[in-house]
Length: 295
Image (tube, rainbow, N blue to C red):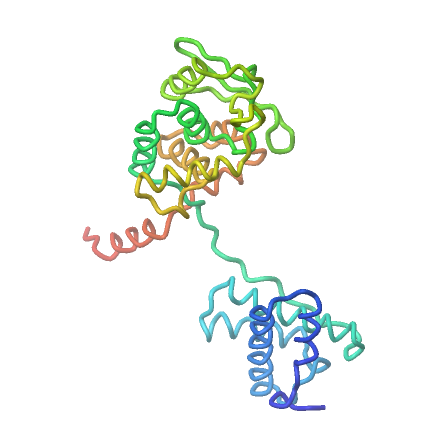
């Protein structure tokens, strides 16, 4: 059997190309495998698919984490390349069965990105300057009521109830086809009322110019336009970030998880709890406070 310096991964690379893999991705696989082969030779000697054990894979994973200091996502991608290669050697008959793989390295979960209050205000000012009631109502429903873009697009006129002091939106096509009612605050009610006053009268709350249902892509394009006008990074403003911002606003205002989960339509509180995770900057601030604290 060839040693690691001679082991040829070319056949595996060609197979990847046949499967539709891009050359760049294929080269990435090769680099990952060559790195593993080099480590294996230095640790165990002769390298071959049959020589790789589950213990070797765990040791290599730990080496990448503790010695190389790679991030969990990078480690998991490298291990995925090895897994794919070993599975291929089984298919080609070079290996009878693959070794047992260790569990993926868990990444620290972070709170979904949300716009700061200042960024939200800049976006809303840009929308107000444009003077388009439809856009203002649509954005308010995502930002202040936490609706998903698909839920907003599916709204019909009958799903909106607006009074002088109260209002609500009925979401009939939520995730998992679950129905929920979301109360509307005064600013959102005002925006929706202004839009209803000039609404074209079709069944959809937010129709397209052709009077059919507006598309999610059209909403994304609209948001990018206002993000540009507000001087915000275009990649940071998209429909789901408005929903994230709504959740963050509610939790920062002291609303409990159960109520926030009900507003967002989350079945599990664990899904909502992700918004309570501290950001990197908040963790850095906490460490600095700990170092400088004097009793």
